[in-house]
Image 1 (spheres, rainbow, N blue to C red):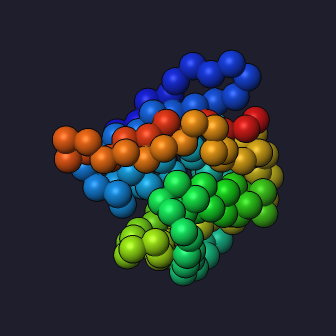
Image 2: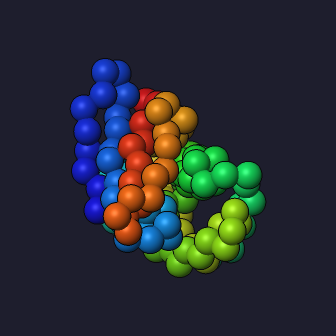
Image 3: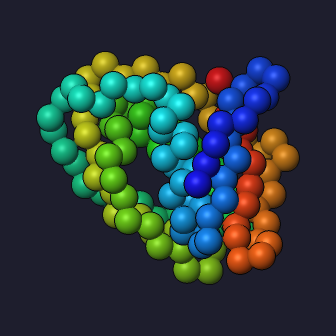
Length: 131
């Protein structure tokens, strides 16, 4: 579950999930919805395995989201993905759609007050995106 939150100059979302993988999934879907990209154009599908290793879950999340922003800036829209997190390694099997004219209004995911917490069997965090 994610919901958009108010932030001074940038965009933010609050995320809750019953698993760490779910938190990463919902953060990704929330970010993609905020881009307002029309993904009905284009028809070329590309699959890719993405593996990211980090030293904490916050950095892992930021690295993953910024990888997706990088893909958007290279005309690839993430349609679907299977995510697995093992220790501090994220492995994704991704399906992208090549779209010729993408404009991504998000510059990057930020560390601004980012802290993934586990409380009452829920993983929670607030993400801020630089516009």
